Image 1 (cartoon, rainbow over the protein chains, first blue to last red):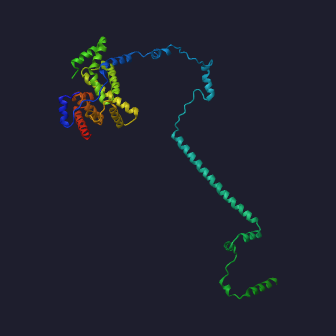
Image 2: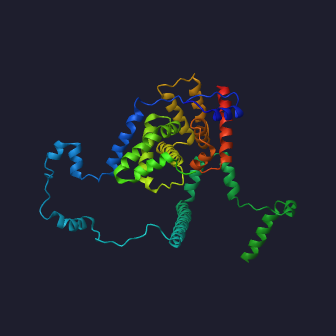
Image 3: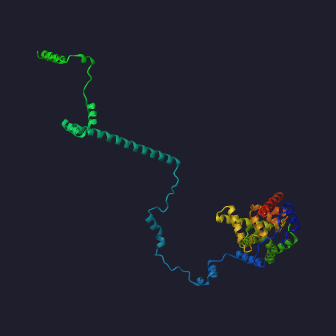
Length: 205
Length: 183
């Protein structure tokens, strides 16, 4: 295809260095000669009334169209009449059920959330109380077991199972010693005896 | 500008029930090549162009009765051909669920798949450059460069002002020139 002078001049004005070329594509030989006839055939097909199933099959496969179209299978007698009842028995659902919306209303959702939160809180509280109670029970149980032991048994145990450090700690914990007042330091050593003697004599008298 | 005398005669034949097909066939014969090339430059591949051309004339057959003779048959046919080509490209884009750039790459692949393709030849380089243009510019360039369509008619085909079409063509030419220089 050759460009007209007007187009070439215009092109040179815009882009002087741009080459002017023809379309490089090609078409199959005789395409344009055959096109109108093919198009008319297509249009006639389009405008034809839609073929019946039998006509369509006849055009596609005369062999299949010649075969009987009867389905060879048979359904049990009365099957279609009882189908509704059988299905109802299997599913246990009424034939026409109430349509329940799948979407949960917002208020119900909020209430549900509150209930779940309350349940979790209650569970945690009960668990905590149970643990506390168990700890108290354990302490009481230990006291009772220790009380049942004799002093001798405890002494024997401590002698065979404690080291020096433990002994110091035990004595410090169980010591009944009281700190004497500072004025007793100057008291003569026989003074307590004299005091006891006098008082005992007095009491005896 | 209304229908040319020749087109009036063809339409008159079409409007008579006895010569309806003859009139239509003559219209097809007159415009098929111009429309084919317009479509082919947009869809690249012959098979695609053939499909689109058939669709165009089927639409013409169905709507020719409603054609108003105050418009040119030529511009009316080009309008249908342009819209059908764009719809076809859009359909391909949707089918492959790819972006526009991928469709353009697809068109470039079709270009390269052409049995006549020669990357060294100027005319094929020009086709590559045209494919790089935005869709509207591509159509404007093709209509002006190859079909030598006056801006006035192009304005009716594309429903765009003549000024905008001139600007579009100008941009397209500049881009193509730049591409050709780089190649």
